[in-house]
Length: 609
Image (cartoon, rainbow, N blue to C red; front, side, top):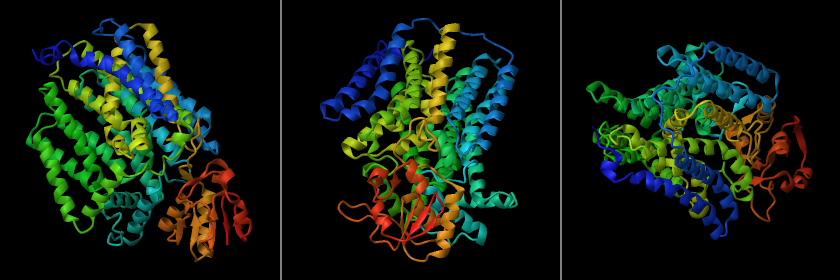
């Protein structure tokens, strides 16, 4: 028999430390900011504190042993029929609606719940597994494509416009040497999209091709997540539930929409972890090297975060005493070697850029997508972080139940559970925002590569609870998963078109009228344009216009330095415009525009000279 947690660590010391430490940390997270005079940060920390306390209470109170088999098998065709009817209705609803209504999110939550019902009631085996994976893949595609293939142009956090411009350039010229040095490291993704566009025969636009590939890639992450969980925690239902947790992870949904090189590396890392769980052979070593190389080439800035996560797992496996280890010295050494070789190959530009980027990421200010609303309106932020509360609650249940029952520490899941706990402050947005607010540290990038640990452990947590109760527990889990699903698809991070609780940030897509207005203004005006961040990135990168983001300085006129000023009036009615700082409608200097000539006004966009 393998070493147990008791054998190696004493009488359940990991469980005892966690069961006491989690509530203590929860209280510290709420009371600490109050002591520092930051009550709003205390409010923000509550979304983490509540699941930490509740998970500890549940594990202490629930002493029912796990049952080896829970048979609630029903005819899978009924939930499947309801699922397809729901998806069809939602597609029609999106088609006839200008913006996705709230009822759309209710419908998506219903489809997610049906996936949950399929997972816990379908017969185990290859047929049931395939059925559940298919439905989960369709569900996440529905959420992703309802934005990217529905609105005129999803721009996300605006990096996408630059990638689209260079992909389009490759398509139009057939050459890659025209790429700027900024985007040259991401050449492989641009060529991949351009090649796929050519294979389609040009019947869809380049940006539609990008979104199709991005969505399908993240849909393929569903079976990869299942396979990874089965290798680490050999329970079919737990593995399928981990897939449901993953497609409920807001960052997973967002990057499925975003479709940039960093998105692809998230899935490559998931597949890399899966490959590493297979017994090392010459073939698997080659595949691992190929995946590491792919991550480095697709998005070189991702590899430091991947390497840190692999290193944490490496240390945890040896500290716990895991026998079937996922990460070994070969993997870490190969990752370092491949990274150094590639960086040296691009040494005249890339190395310096990566170093400066690393400094900015770890010590720079908060990103423009997370401004002062975190401090000024924390309840709005907490409302949008609720899906993370559900995920953390389930993940903590998985961790605590495992170590409470003192199962074998030789199992890979023991180390993965520890890594999950270690990654919570890095992967979930709350702690990173708190760190940024208090110390100027921004480590949110880890969320793009650590989501699978939270999802895996959360899936185990749901499975653990389900195996310890009857119908009442099943109904309770049904309520909890429906709450997770609804909040996961309706928060402002993934539903900026019509969020249930709106944050004071910009909308992540441009309308057809806005794009047409940009084109018309670009055709008729040759001078320097001043505008908001989203407009300027579009104009400069897709229209090749001369545009500067308006600089907001106290006591200075906002638009004085610019001969032409472009204002997205439709966006301004809904959200603050993001210049160098966000400017709300009541702070907007309309008098400056009144002194100018309005030479163009489409209703959504106006231009003033």
